[in-house]
Image 1: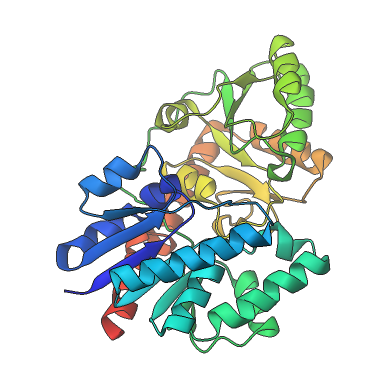
Image 2: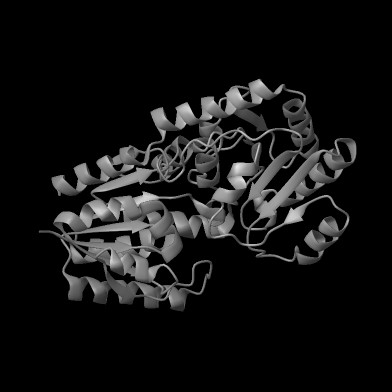
Amino acid sequence: MKRILILANNDVGLYKFRKELIQELVKKHKVYISLPYGDFVPNLKDMGCEFIDTPISRRGTNPIEDLKLLRNYKNILKDVKPDVVLTYTIKPNIYGGLACRTSGVPYIANITGLGSAVENGGLLQKITLSLYKVALKKAQCVFFQNKDNKEFLNKKITISNSRLIPGSGVNLKDYALLDYPTDEVVNFLFIARIMKEKGIDQYLEAAEYIKQKHPKTTFHVLGFCEQAYENKLKDMEDKGFIEYHGMQSDVSEFHKISHCTIHPTYYPEGMSNVLLESAACGRPVITTNRSGCREIVDDEINGYIVEQQNSQDLIRKIEQFLNTDYESKKKMGLKGRIKMEEEFDRQIIINAYLREIDIH
């Protein structure tokens, strides 16, 4: 029985996207999870995980707080004495990797996205890449969720062993193929944190234009408002352009009524879970031509690719979708489901991890 330590920055992502891997690991191994306490921690403990409460400032850039995190990780390694450590997201990858490297503990990192610091360049990019260079050099394996991230980091730093995996994959049972709804009214979904980089401005602009030209459409918005969009959403809802539903822990009821998911993001994604889940349910998707999104869409086969931050292009693709006959819309959704089954089944990721853990 191995002692496996998982370092993550939140409980929601670990439970939603990695619970199937954890279920496999706890069958044969002792599993510890280190992350801040959250609503899903009891679920993870019920699965058999030993929880270690570890505060993380996810988006903070205070070096003192980051040094505290590094010290915490070193102390956790001393206490747990793991045989292997799995790290997810930027700070656990960097500071967990540094702690493992200096402690001589095998570790497997997962690059879930490079983050804005690397994407935007400048001093913060240089600092982040310098930290990655030290943290990932001795990793037993580094998993990348899209090809662009892998090529970028491999050009900048030396990684001895890296593998490409299809994001976090999608649980094809949890996100089963749904019946395609009738199209008396066509429902579009936006599912994301309400923030500029997720493309909310483009979605709202498209919704206002399309709703006036095509009244038998509804534009739904699901997600927590992280930035100052509350007044804008309320105004748009009052005018009848959108329906805002706030944060939803279960979006399955919305997928049932949806005809298409629109994800106009230009945020640095690893692989978009919103798109994976929508496609698995048999829904066409419209998204941007960027890594972590375009891999999921075969343009005009199971959805449409649009230019980033281009509302007019988004409007054109929405109208193209609306002008498509019902059976063709339904067929697009089915093609998406088949793509998920062939390329993005979560079992692919589980198998990749089990192989690496068995090696080490």
